[in-house]
Length: 580
Image (cartoon, rainbow, N blue to C red; front, side):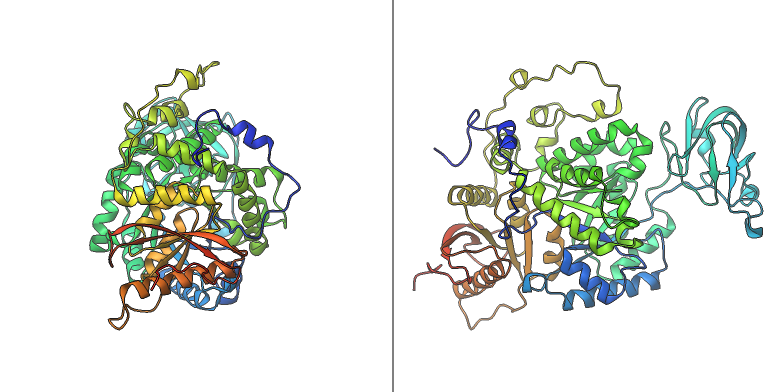
């Protein structure tokens, strides 16, 4: 039987019935899903960062909603130093730094008398409150008056629409628009109002610019710190990413821009955002206010599926292990949430307050590592490989909502996310149009498909990829092999960025190209490095099979060669790569 499953030979239902609950996860399998940790006061010192890296952190997130440039510069320097000291699995691990922008936020003003010990006031449901954009009211917020710093709020709001305050804990309904800067609202849900609380307008199309002056300054500062990626907050359309690239200039080609989808407009425009972004983050915090909470999981599954089809990395974030900010163990629901993000197809999962200010940052990373590994065992790798080959067109054509395999593979369209659910969906696989098998258009992608197919057929311990730009490794990740993808590159920035892609274990090869050794000897040296690293990870046993993917010449764009090798448990190659 072919190593590639044919329809009817297996199905997710049967696969799930064969999961072994009490069998320990094999130590031979590394974690394929990346872990992103937000760095804050409790984890910004070098010893704490070393512990995070050794426990499983791949990407360090700097939240620029808080802290000065000097504060973040020191934190980034500490990450670089910790990267040099940490030795997970006995290997040096590249660690990426991500700059998370503040983005176009809307906030309330200061409470009246805030400097005199007044920390909050109570808003009572049913009472009226005046919402004003007049700056004279900035420090006069009370139970009867609320200043909001969005000058155009009166023009974008309509009578009857809702305003959410403080992550949706309080809500106001517009009753009357008096003039260009004042509205009368009814308090629908009351609560304790403090100063500088966030405001969401789920029913309105906000016309704030994608980048504030502060964001522009933060991005330029990030360039001086040689960051690897940007998490761009509150992205609503493709033009927002264009604005960021204009600020970055030539550096845009070297930095990965990850669009955070946090509002209704971003969900509606998700296809064009995916096409122009280097990756997507499903930021469920503000999203859960902008759309009904029962729709958030639909948005998560839809966005992740679209990114999988497009071959773009996708991150699932917000409140994944929130209770571990104060507790040493997660709730059962949180553990299931992390696992389901992995099963949905996320490349990375993210911790926020758990590692920035929590009491148990190492425990949070450790349990997230364990949950991801268990979930990856439940992932139906071979069936996914079949599906992505059959329905995933090369490049971004798969995202056309009217034609192509997107109609088959991603039935959760954004209109379903944002509209009421019918009682019967009448979605039947038998009734869906069956597209013809799309053949790969790129030599590199054909090579990657062959390598992944071979890894399934031979139950390989790992796939070794020699890469200049990381493009081949990203293509390989798209097909989700069961075997870890060990990527060797001479570009340290590329090595760090590859943590975005599921299954990739990047290694930085510091030795420069030398005219004194042949190209084939150089290939051998890099493969040997990867195999020894696999041995240190415990991925090898006696007579392990590995697949190697290389180019026919030096430089980018030459990947076309797949070979198989046999190695022992110490990482020694039994069959030589090249016969002298």
